[in-house]
Length: 353
Image (cartoon, rainbow, N blue to C red; front, side, top):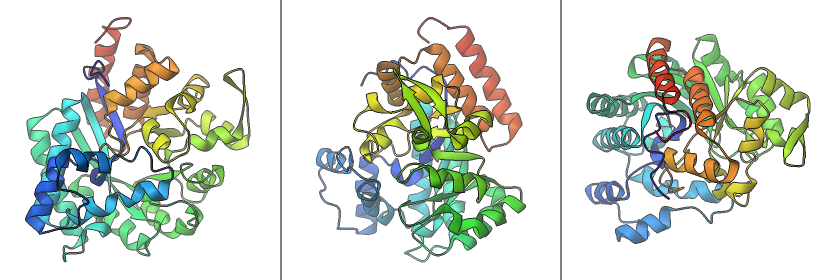
């Protein structure tokens, strides 16, 4: 895709740190760690292997993470990946970003979870010092692991490292969000914000549980809320009770078009409901999810919705405002960026930025 949207100022709420490595960095870290299980050491072939365009399901898509997680088991590796990610997002016009990270996945070589977060925080600080991209962390508990309560406690205790939220991630099927109420309650009662993956692998029941059992303020993906709506002649004409609640309460949807196509929710970008939801007044934001596995960037996500869903400058402005208003980072920093972005979009409405 072209880079025509790189100059648009952006905000990103849903990006997984271990899903956005540079291919060259995977090879470098694998060599440093003497990790020999990569499917290939040819950079082009490895990049093609990581691209999960044909995975067809969330479970298949997630298997590609085994190799990147394996090379992210040292403090130096984590710091390098975090630093490079800030630099890469800044080069794509991102001014504010929140990353997902599951510390429990990075302790195979005896790092403590607190050391995992400290290393990532050091990389973020180095990246921020060189760019204008403000970056914060969301700590994820994996639904297919058994330590959600401990991860929530860690997230609450790690605000000084830039942690601004708690998340549940991983496979949805067989792991109802309601089962993690105790972990989410720890975060909620400590006034730590919550966003939960829901409505990606499973349908609206997971979204309802995320909101009403887990007190999520945002929903990761959430696009299957369209299953609680009636669509006629290319527009939403009626909403069920849950969809009405999500729209009327302006629950932020962290939408990632290419990722949803690659995990088999929708066959192609044109059939994705992002345009329907946006036009019907839902609080849609645009995100990357996993830049390596989906071969994407936020500029490419912008291009997709421009091409297939007729988003224009005003639509991108609204989605970006939605993201900054719904961010979990400190409001004064987001407010400054929001003012800058408002000025940039308003001075360029109707023309290329």
